[in-house]
Length: 271
Image: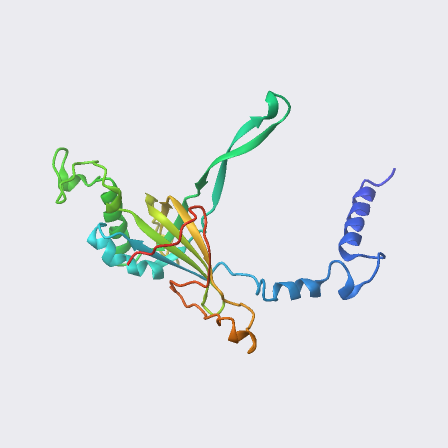
C-alpha cells in the first residue's frame, strides 16, 4: 500500500528547495534566500534592527478642567503603566455591486480607531484607584453617598449627570524607544478618556504578584510621528548643506519628521 506521507514529504522538500534555492543557481550568500542577507537587511540604516515591545513610555496629559486630583496624580502614571497597546484603525466599508450585478466589492466611507487598554500597577496608598474613581466620576457622577438620590455634589452635579467633555478629556502620548532609550515613534491620541475601569482580582494565594488595574481608553483619532533615531551619519561634505539630525530623548516634543495619521493635522500638545 503506498505511503500517505509520500506527497506531503515531497511538497515539503519542494518548498525547502525554493527557499534555499537548491540546484537552481548560486548558493550561499548569492542565493535568493540567505540568512546573512536577512541579518544584514535588519541591521541596515533603513530598519536599524527590530523593536522590542517592552521599551515604551506612556504620558497622559489631562485638560485644564479635569479634577485637580487627577491633574496632580497623573504624572506618576508613566512609572506605574505596566502595559499598553498601540492604537490601530479600521476602515469602514459598505458592499457595492457594479451595475447592480456580479460580485460585491467594498467601498470605504469612513474610519474608526480602536480603543486601547492600559494596565497600571496599584500602589499601596490607593492613589491609582482614587484617581480613576475621580476621573470617571467627572464623566458620569455615580457617587451616591455624597449626592444621595436627589442631591448634588460639590460641583453641583446630580446623581448620574453627564459632565462636559472638557471636564474629562485628555491627550495621551505613547513613545516607542530603542535600546538607547531614545524615541523612535510617538503616538499622540486626541480627545481620550477612560471608558472602562475593569475589576481588580484579589486572592489569598496571590503572594508573589502585584495588583493591576486594567483601564480601557477611547479617543477620537491619533497621529504618528517618526523620530530620526538611527538615521545614517551625515558626512562632513553633506553637513555644509544638510542639518545634522539631533537625537531625541524620552518625552521629546520636537520630532525630526512627522507623518500624520487619520486627522492630517499637526500635533498640538497641551501645556
